[in-house]
Image (cartoon, rainbow, N blue to C red; front, side, top):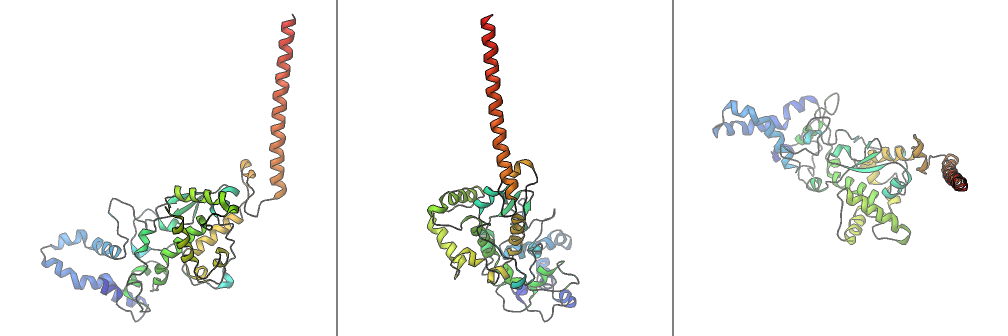
Length: 333
């Protein structure tokens, strides 16, 4: 199957898809051999199609037991490698169309302190960095993506190969084949970079960030992200940043990560939601927000709370004095 998936294509047209679909070639090369092993045609029909799909998933390290959900689970069905990143816009971006981001706003401690948003773990890759009401969904199972980084199929130098047919099925209209292997190769790095941006911007505690650092570590631990040695965090963080001295420069609109990483567009959308957030309920007015909250209304809310507390205390004191007065009168009589 590996040899079939790496076989080059001469065109991305629909006719090529029909002619060079890897499952068709696998049928030609393996179906009869399985029949010779003693499997009847009736038996083959019960598992052959699923076998081909599962085999491709297993080769990429994405296979899962039937009783466990797949990280590619989406819209009520269990998908295979054919649907990976189908919900992510992989169109090439130009730097002038990429929005500016602030690393400080994307710090997890800052997010939970300044607004109603909280982080929740998801087992599904397509939900990473998306919002479900006030929950920011985070995919943390990096080990499931690690094996893909250096896979020979993804490192294939052919502009188009049979593997690209699988990942292009039902993705484009009219049907044609597109090479998304570079995005798949960067998938582990992209998810890992987003996690470190959110939770480990300051891997070595500085006195200015000490409280925020501890809060970030706790949030990450609650999500299942844990490091026994702080030096491991520093090493991975430096590896992600590469030549960039800070996370702010890493997020510059011209960097390779901003232009090519598959989860940068979801990160852009999350940032837009945060910076555009305004209180919609009374108790949400206590949050200072992420730059779009009316300062006058915010301090008006705090002033109103303070006046309310003072009024309640005064009412309680008045009630106590009244009660004491009535009690004194009762004793006098």
